[in-house]
Image (spheres, rainbow, N blue to C red):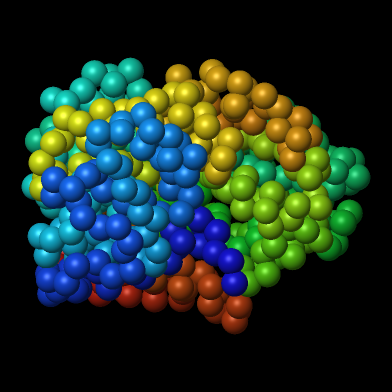
Length: 429
């Protein structure tokens, strides 16, 4: 089974808890690593995961900085756990390493393991970039431990041909205007489903949950360390999510998403900019029929990663120069072309790779949706245990859609399980 980036982000919630429980126990070097030797004088080791950077740009960096002797390694498996274990062990630490966005809250809590990039030049770049994204990798005392690679502004992907066939708003501006709230989106979905019974506007409840919780003012744990996953706001997000099930708009396609995308069973799919690659690779025969509109209510963010320099790195100045070159606007545009990595630097959005029309989306210039969305993303605090605490909610949503569990009972069970995870992670209610 092929896993999309969305699948991997969801899996991260479970893995995060396992990592929290085991991080301090092992002194072994990371397994499955080729070419590891970072933190030494034997060249510059760079860790990232498949699709995390453009392989072409990384290869060009080795040519650009010949004296640095860059040795890049694509790390498979649980990237966070391997990095966590390696940092704790103190051996084979890479000179430069990626950190996934969902893992940054944890690594921000062990900031002493990383170099402060601010004095190296990051502070001046952050002042003209997406402040909310730079802030995700900044500690409360002002230490900047991450340089943003990409962001995941969210929007609504939808099948233009099916909505046109049903006589409903089908062009991006009209679709956006007709779906400014989740209730309006569901109402449009009901109209579509009435005219094309095989078409649904939600692929799975977890997808909507990701979007709606990204729009809340607080997530599961607030900045004082208090569990707030049972707040009225979160309960409201839950009700909005399960409404898709209650209205019969859920295709329940979590195990067969590509097939559902190809057949038209899924006629709309909210997601981050990088989800475009999942759709185009999962349903290539539907090229030209998809469009992108604004997300109901407001944009949020899902995913988006960083490059960091571990504190053990002996020449952080050179490491920073390499990072700044790899993540220059021109190279970020190359990453978008190669792997749909949506640049974190707005300067890259002005380049032809992003301003041109996308044939898969009928020639639509999708930057017109994702660019403004990225600028509107609200800042949201994520605690180190956020991903682990969030996992029980999706487990319960799965029971609602697969076994018909009562949504309110599922909410109560999700909150209880999340509180248990929170307590085991050291949280105080």
